[in-house]
Picture (cartoon, rainbow, N blue to C red):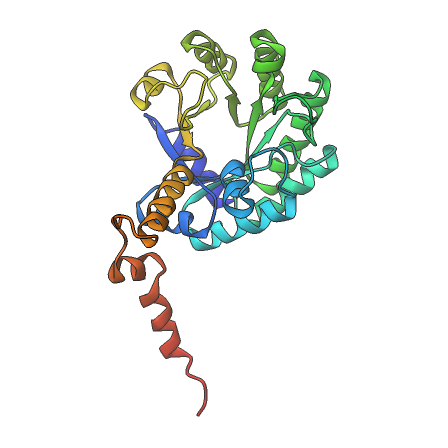
Length: 287
């Protein structure tokens, strides 16, 4: 197993809840590292928003996702990264190709989910999933690639909203049987469903997702820890804060009140000016 995957596994085996911010670009990754977070999520929804100003509706290609994820890992190499593999972008071979590319980029783990790809249109953004046997085959292919590459697999099911909780739970059981390392039930309705999903994970870590304005069951971190969640990710908080801050800055430029802003030293710290000026002095061009 790769060192970063071992470090992530060890972190998840410690008592308590691990909090993981979601990132959509290099600056977010830099600030997450500066804040001292040990893990981060290369969030597809944040990348779609920051790169394309579009919603997370399968509008990003895998090369675009890989490019941004590679940048974030390079900017914050000491952070343990979860890459968003989405559906794997095709058949079982495509799933394995996706995982191998993220492993080469330095990811500690990859998320693979059971949604249909590309997303069927005309359903108001519904989270429709592939049939259960296809989902199990996708997970099997993902587990094999993760084992070969020495990283961890997060198996996610989105079946709760379109096919009901019993189907979602059956899929989690399948993913456990196939050997996934981490598990996520999207959109649990309440604590009972979340606890049942944790039980289905057979002692392996189960994660939760908290998003601004989300409609599913999202207790606070203390409650998640009490319930038994090992890892909570906030995939859109940095994005939401960035939108608010940029709008406030633009309103100030137009003549409104100026919001608080990073001044020279803070800006220089964020973009690592001192580090690059030090490198600049080591490589002077000949006169």
